[in-house]
Image (cartoon, rainbow, N blue to C red; front, side, top):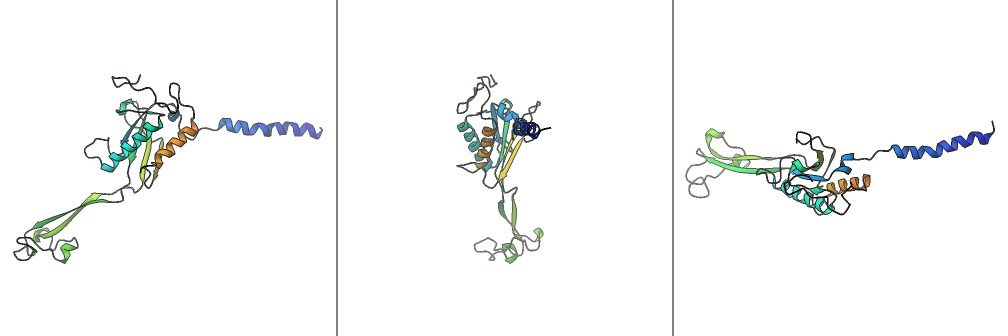
Length: 221
């Protein structure tokens, strides 16, 4: 067999291999991100107007919701049941501590022992936060309480299950101050990944234009 007859087929296979590899390459983000129209934003610990929600989480919800509105690829809904994707956020908490002081009768709380009439003056142990003699002895005690958690901000994207519950995260990123304005870096990472994988929004939704709004009855059109 002549050399040229061998090199020809080998060269053809070599040229086709990159094309086949590119065809089989899958996007780095789930397909639902390219198909979704509606998103809902909430915190790990609850919805925006939950009474016990941390104020920083409430601010993060509003900031991320505004970022989605400016992006205009998805429509932000007021009800989770209307959403295709749920965006879950949480601000980092190094330490959020509340301190309280309690006073009771005892050897350190008698008249003349305080800085003012009837006011106890804590001894060295109380000033260090340790009640002298325990609760039964009275005096001044420092009570510590508060909340601590992951130091990094959290951004998750979750699907909605058939039962209306939030599913396991399809996208999750954390970083210090990742939800801080003006950049909201964690949101920007998600936006760039979706736009890169799915540059063409679904039918009826154009990049830079809002998707169709839900009807007045609060349902998808």
